[in-house]
Image 1 (spheres, rainbow, N blue to C red):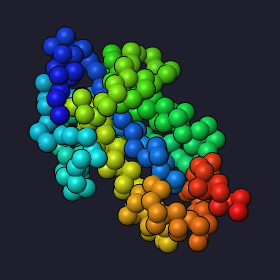
Image 2: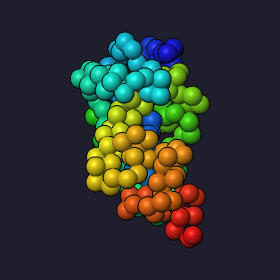
Image 3: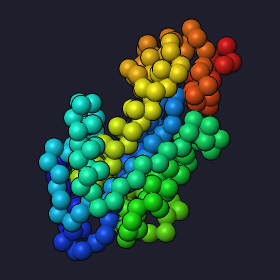
Image 4: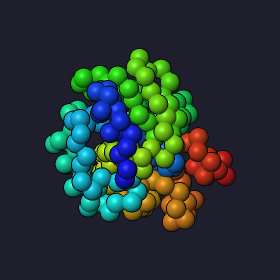
Length: 200
């Protein structure tokens, strides 16, 4: 992690946050977005792209981030919203809500990937942002930990799909369970593998 982007903005006294999502490519469950506004200069040790961290380390860092951040927020769009408006718009909706709940409202939003439309503040899309900004990486961790918890709970409610293991992503085991059991109430009906099961 090279927080050069964050350091430059802190140096300029810009009030900014990082935003990222988890679950965009899954076949079931919500998409979760997090926004994190760190205290100026607070480079939390160990923060990395959430995909590079073990579940235990993500959980530990999630608690540290929540304790030390100036402000943080986690919001989601459900599987129903995803089916109604599409995954991209559902993701943007969750991101906008997460940003709106920060206090203070940032002057600038750094987001992993594409800039978020419809914000009342400046927004900069950063390709590979969870590797280039500690603020985005913190948001990535919060979003991933929160969504994993949701999917583990859904795994208890809907056994037979393995949600606790694959978190709703299209692994071979998940697709086979989907074909065998049919979609659960929290599967995304507009996603190809799920739609194929409904139509077959």
